[in-house]
Image 1 (cartoon, rainbow, N blue to C red):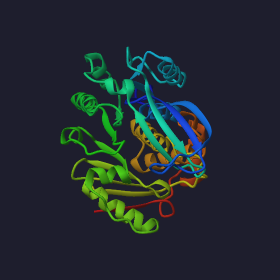
Image 2 (cartoon, helix red, strand yellow; image 1 turned 90 degrees about the vertical axis):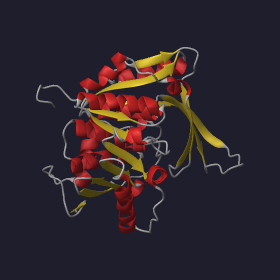
Image 3 (cartoon, one colour; image 1 turned 120 degrees about the horizontal axis):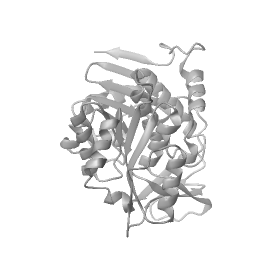
Image 4 (cartoon, one colour; image 1 turned 60 degrees about the horizontal axis):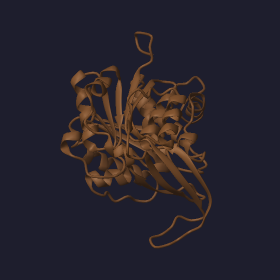
Length: 337
């Protein structure tokens, strides 16, 4: 809660897709055809997922800047976002272009493959003065890379011009990043594949200790490009590094995976909400890990994103003493240069 008594606000700039999900006994290999035992069409997209994760966290209000088509999928996406309390005043409707879709296969262990068809998301460019002004009302501006990079860069530059908003880039899908975008990015959130696409691959040994050691080496490379980095390691957890010397490794909360779709989006959205609410970075990372662990235990994207009470309960069970104080030695390690 801000000093004015109002909740802080996060602006998510990103994609909204309809997820077309097929559940299979095994993910298809190149050239292979597999049979699915179920199919669903569910609202998703990295931007929409992250916006709903912000809203459901209960820590911050959320506005969404994106684009959908003038079609059935677009109407459903708008309704789903608005139904979770996301402000959709900046959600464009693009005539003559279909809403974005994602083709997803999921195996019984929860692993997935995803192919995204951008549709209207690819038309989100040339931000208006009103859209750019929306960044001035926010504590955090969060974006991903399922929309044009130039759009993300323009939104982040506008946020920096106000001098208020923290800019967070979830650099997914994986790709190389322009120096101009990195120059206006305050916090980079990536997984191992995305980190390798930016800074090159880093050998990773077996076991949690080796995973974190390799991740911190990768973080050092990324810090040459951006002031702060959160590198997610799936079931191992997340490591965080910043140019001021902070180093944190947060183990993942144990979960029973059903579907990993939207786990990374939940992490990014809840992390953004926590930082908008001025939570310390260690606690924000723990809270985001707790939320992501809940997401993988349910099928689907938006349907799997947890709500505030669930996240608080998982966080308290995994990362905090009964009184709510963070554990230190048992759940995280901190080193400083």
